[in-house]
Image (tube, rainbow, N blue to C red; front, side, top):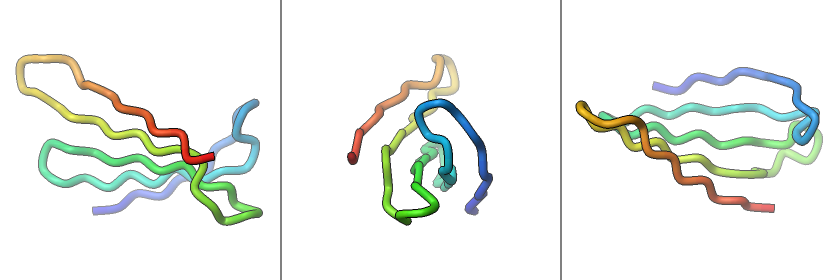
Length: 60
C-alpha cells in the first residue's frame, strides 16, 4: 500500500510525502517535486506496547 500526498512547509516548500506500509514498518520519503529527487527518509517502526520509533535519514 502506498499513499502519496502533497504538502507545503517552510523547509520543504514543494515536496511529496510517500508512505509505504509493510506490516508494522512505515517508510516515508520526501521528494522535491521540481527536481524529482528525494530530500529525506523517515522510517517508523511500531511496537504494540511502545510509541513509534522514528529514524530520519537526510538525503540532501
